[in-house]
Image 1 (cartoon, rainbow, N blue to C red):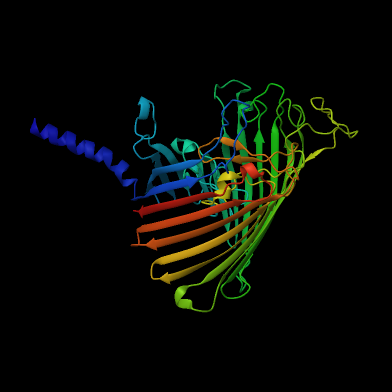
Image 2: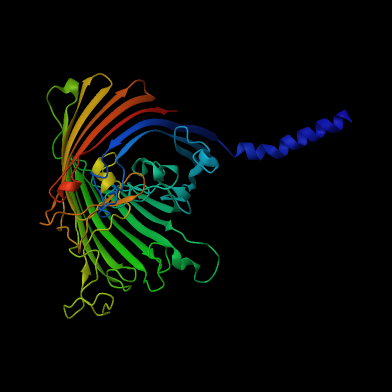
Length: 487
């Protein structure tokens, strides 16, 4: 009997051996980021007059004081020299909110990453990754990590949507490495409705296709040229449009970015992108349910320079200018071919063009107040800043940002500010239709306690400009203090 038991154990071990041998290496990593958030006047003092004898309302976030913790765990497993898998788990929650009211999902652990990587697939230059992964290119002007970075899903959507780390999509990426040229081909599901398997079920989906070509010139200035083309198609039954009379939305974004280092310590970058296609609209707005031609533009210039003085303090200055186009009547009925405004009777042969830039999947301005309040559209941003290391392991930086509108705000082109708790606070522009959105001042200090532990403090003030009425121009402020532990 004993021999039979030993034989059975040996046989089980022999059968299990191939499964264990298939995993050559496993790496576990992650981070825990705990942050205290204090915010004031993010509604810019906005109020709504209800009427005589009634109490006025103040929509939006007036004051906020909350602690949050964001935890990520990542497991990378090499199955062979050319096959690996990655799984990432994430939890984002406010302190003490576990099971609040018996319905809270703040303690839930969600799937952040889940993809397989196949290297030298079919032939040596090709690498393919399939599953939930990050799609990020360049400086994130068009294609950032996962949707516009002032929005979120999950528990932080109602607390601090702009600080979420849930930045992945389900999709496929093929990388062709022909050094010095690298070509990425990608597809991911931007939004999905109810998957019923019915013939027309995909009409409620939004999909993104794209190609990104990165070429390293190999010159003395380490110049890199990057060209891309991204496309987003949205079906006419998507909740983005959500009306039976809607037509689908098609957005095509070709662009070019160049980065070079003309002298030691100086990096300069320039990027330009266009948006073409047809904008889907809801019945009663814009084209009254029809779609209209897109023609929008964005361009950006960036420079950073490490000063050749006081090198022990590592002084660096930087500057950037960003332009994203607007539309003078972005929120009202469009004009017909004869130049009359049909409002609800839009003509199919209209020559009207929608020129407002769509934020697409931008990932810029993270941590700033203006990024929380405004979508990246109809805007010019000038940013100037500097950074220094006054003491070992301590880095301090300051940035001034000036924001102006590309097109004046009016009843035809209303100004809307967003809130970190996911609500929207409409703020009227001044009667004069001014363009000044405001100025922001940010101070950031980080202390590298160890290689794995960092303490950081960020202070910001946003002073509204003359695009806001006197009743809606309170200064917004925030203080963020966090400790980040990597493992």
